[in-house]
Length: 214
Image: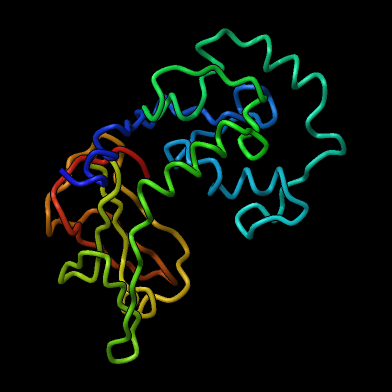
């Protein structure tokens, strides 16, 4: 068994309906479910809260002066121990740890030490790309003839999307209809629908599986 396979065995995926955002837990935002399995460091919302400039997805976010106040700290401390579980405990990377830093992973020494250790033991898979007839083709993805791709992630989870050809063909998308969480999808069947200027384009699934997050 390779190191990457061992790492994927350790990692757990929290059911989507139980993934309350850490900032929601202490009242910074009213409602949000995590869609990144608690990979907070890559979350655009967290970046928007912690940095002076906002990513495009949260360009309209209004952050009040002194947004992380003593009241939020007290709200964090008032949570029961099970509500203050470290994100690395939620994903199964450590057996037990209670957060003592108000969910601010960016300033947590334990989080940084774990990242340093993980980066040494499990180097990231190199992402390689090539160009074919003017279209970008990532070589680390698995492609389906329906112009969709699949990327294997931790614990049997697979992320899917459309390829560069389909993206350029469709252009700016108005709405996207996605499958429901828990819905079973078959390879080659229509799994989602893109709408633009009154036109519809149905997208085929590149694989069999059950939807756990959208």
